[in-house]
Length: 414
Image 1 (cartoon, rainbow, N blue to C red):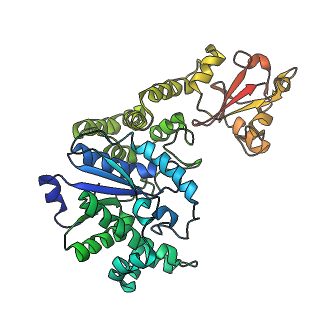
Image 2: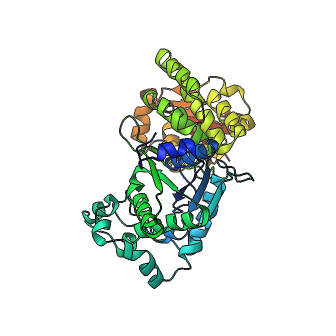
Image 3: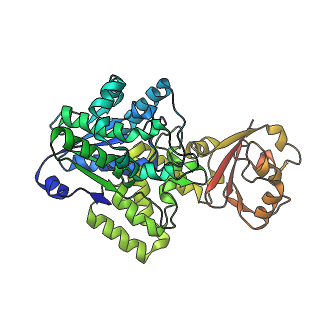
């Protein structure tokens, strides 16, 4: 799980209790699954007797981190950042213990000190310790200089601001370790250098690799977009399904990184995956563990119930209320019930309807029905001429449409 670390850190972590921090950029009101590895890093640190600090970058968020970005971020207003900081803080509280005790977690906002410092003082106290040559050597800067858009002075200053954060945490909280993804190594070492120059003390950095799937794609990105930790952005059902759909080659690394399961448990699941991959036992445990951490056990129960019904053949025996309870997180649309009177509505027309849009066109909908890739109330539909009437709807109120094995949609008759 470790990509790189400063020399001597492993010995210090084994012998001493340290205070370490990670920064979170408030570019949205929610973290996403790509941030989850970072959050787990802080949570794991605390479980092993160290003290975690989470910085929510209300100050640096107004500048934008150029690391890993090909072009400059859109700058947010102070009001947007304040709202985003609140959302991120609520999510971190699910993972970290902020109660009493010697290792209680702490959340700080770097706007508290960056917002008060004046430009001349900052340039004198921090800026003079960074040569332009030093900053140009950092990958986050050099990569942007090679791009067509280049890098603005605003983002060029981000490295010094993050280094100043480390100095502030060192001075006020005795923080001696900064952690993050491998793309943050340049920013982290800048803070280490600043503290060495100003305080004559040695502090440390630790980074983990940027997570990718076995296929080489960026972790956390799906066809539907980003997978968020906020239930309003990504429903708990979709969140659960994201982990359940993990590839066999990725599931064991994910169990190691995103759960607190011990080594024997994970090794047992690894053997099960090799012996009976079709049972997807490791994926079910992964989905259950991570969804419990992020959304709670109740949403896991609902998601597992939904999944069992999702691929069963008994959906027609359920009432409309039961179906909606199970599929409450599935996308839905309302269609006038009059469209299903008489001869009913063409399945192909419904699949391509702008409010449903399971298929982009009627021709593609027709082809998928003919190939057996469309299900109505969990029953395969193979006739492209099929029409749906109100009498076929569950309780006369709704249809459950499915494209392939994963993409579902509820049609409510209004």
